[in-house]
Length: 215
Ligand code: SF4
Image (cartoon, rainbow, N blue to C red; front, side):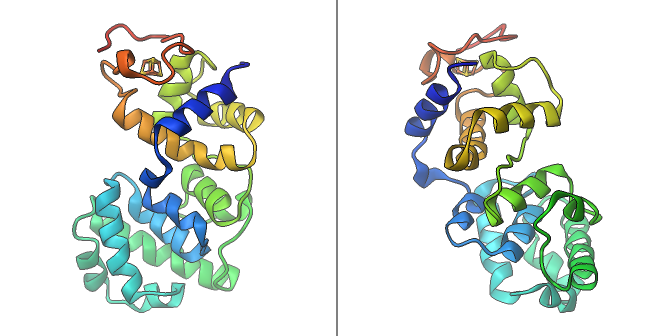
């Protein structure tokens, strides 16, 4: 496991930080309300679409009360490019109501309170704890699980085991950057089918576990 930092440094250099996702850029001036709402909107949509939607959404809503007050059809219209826009509109409203009523409009800064809110799962929870509150947490997604297994760091598809491994091996800013780096690497190089190993910046460090076909 000794090459974790070396690999992450190489990937970080390769994927210019200016290409960070919309949510990651929010870390620069963290607003827990915007990070939570942004994360719920971003699920299963492209970053460029997410950015457009959030620009529009945050020009209309600035707090949880605003999300509760906005007409559901207007909210669905703002989310019109998002997959499952009706479901997402309902979740934004229900999460906002729960935070307003149970937590006095303050986004919780701990795992148990966040996960007690219907509509918030482990990935969203860790995005909030990491991006909004700077805690040593990492949102784990399918890109992350695929990459850490292929490199040979871990042999597990379990969310919490992958999270634990990364938290144990990365600290501070390196941990906070890791989600964006894995996302970029998973979408551009270490894709799920036939990864681009010949152009990969960490091909010398990677064991390519389970990779049967590559380019
Ligand atoms: S060498 Fe191939 S399998 Fe390994 S990280 Fe790079 S793209 Fe993924």
